[in-house]
Image 1 (cartoon, one colour):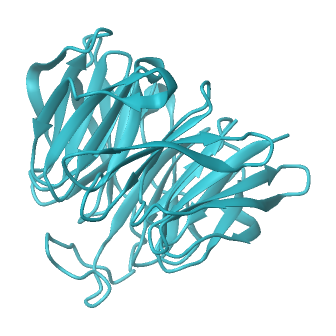
Image 2 (image 1 turned 30 degrees about the horizontal axis):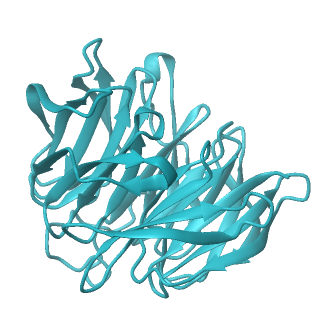
Length: 337
C-alpha cells in the first residue's frame, strides 16, 4: 500500500494524510482529521496504529488518534489535558512512554502509555527556558533548550524512572538558538535557529554528548544576518533555522527566511563536510522529513498549503517530483510505513 505521510497544519487545526506513491513519484491526498487547534507536533506509534497529537486552547492537551493504514483516516480515541501547549512529541522505550516539551511553559514531561494509548499521570518532568525538542534512544533522553542554549541529558529506565546524567547539560554556543536534534548511530546532529549551524556531537558509550564539529548551513552571500530571541526574521531579514534530518549520505537542514533545504555530506564516523547543495522548497519550511531509506524528502511550509515530495540526488540536491494540498500553516511532517 506504500508509505503514509502525515502533516500537522497548525493554521486550521488539522492533520492531513497522504500516500507516497514511489512508482508514480506522487503524493496522493487521502484524509483530513479536524478538531486539533494549533496542532504543530505529533508522534506516531506505527506498531500500535496510534498517533499522539498536541492541540492548543484554553486547556491544551494531547489527543490519541487511531490510524487506519488502508484509508489514512484518523479517529479520536481520547483526549488528555496537560500542563502547557506542547511543542515537540516523541516516543521512548518502544512506545511505552510519550515525551513532550512546551516552548512557552519551559517544561517537559514523561507520560507512561497504558493500553489503548491512554496517557497516565506523568512519571517525570524537567524545566528549561523555551524547550524546543525532546528525543530518545534506548534509555538516553535529550531535551534541547533554545532559551538557555543547552542540551539536557537524562536517563529514562524501562520502568519509568527519569534521572539526570553526568554532566546534566551540554552547552551549545551562546546565542546560537539551539533548536532541533536528530540521532543517528553514534552521532547527534543539532540545527541552530539564530546562527543556522549544523552541529555534530559524538555520542559516548554512556550516552553523553561531546561536540565534534559545526558547519554553516546558510547560503554564502544570502544577506541573512544572525538572529536573536524576540526578533522578527522576515523583516530584517535574519537567519531562521528550523529542522534537521539524516538522508543516507547527507544531512539535511531547513532555513525559513530563504525557504531552502541545505544538503551536507556525511563522511566516516558521521563527520560533516561543507554544504554541497541548496534546494528550494515550500515557503517557510519549519518542518520536513525523510523516508527510512533516505531516498525521498517531504517538506511543508508555514506559508504554503502544499507538501512537496522531492528525490535526493547523488550530488545531494533535491528534485521536486510532486506537490499535494495540505492544510494551512503546515509545520510538522512524518512518514509511516
